[in-house]
Image 1 (cartoon, rainbow, N blue to C red):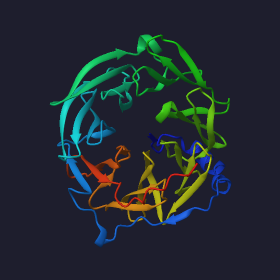
Image 2: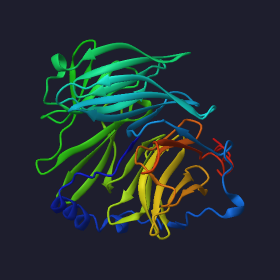
Image 3: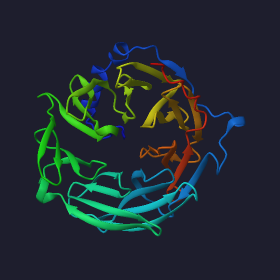
Length: 369
């Protein structure tokens, strides 16, 4: 799971976050290893093997990309016509490099998409602030299965709603704080309540029933990770980009958008790497692989990765300003393929698929008992 850079912070709040976070790098200082995202010509990726571009055949604002398994993924795009908002749901394949439009969902008044995920049983679930919509993956694509209205259950004052991968629980931000509801019993549990001077920014479900959330206050942004029993596993300062999963948390340094801090949630061990002359645009973490989209001064974007086991850094793909730009809906599959929107003003929206598992270091020998 990952979070995008928050683009809607008021300038004054953003300034406070920046100034108050100046101490983050000093506090976490396991000397950052400096790396340089660059793609030498003799090691350029090979189309069809290391990357593919999937044409959606339309101009779509991509909200979410969800990997349904190691090869199938769904793209959820949005748009409006005559004041009515819609969601377009695609099914794409990493194997074929193609995608098809499977369904169109009309959004009700004041309805917005909160999250999308692949459930443990293989279904796709879309979670808006008003309902849950489930899709079966079939040989022909995606078929809408059931819809569950959330308004009678949660009311209309909840925000940032996200379904658990089991499909049995839903987490949301209420006036009380971060809560979880069992959809069968309708019983709610309050997991976190921010301090009076802070508010909940966002949250995400992690592997093994962990849940991570961020709060923002005058002294900066804080990332917190909770165990399944609700106890706190880790808490620390974070920047505006963060990713959580695979027993780790990764975050942009609060005072330097070129530095990534990594925390092992089991041991508390911390490490860091800094990007030479580039800033972070997006982070995604899965299966021990941390992937990032970075942006250089000349507006060239890079897709690179950091292997959490071996510590090996690799650059996999570069997109120049003339070729387009990369969107921030960025996600990793379980086997290390990254999916990110490739945007261009002169063509349809495409999804760039890049194999980030290449260039990873050797597996470490297991520790002896």
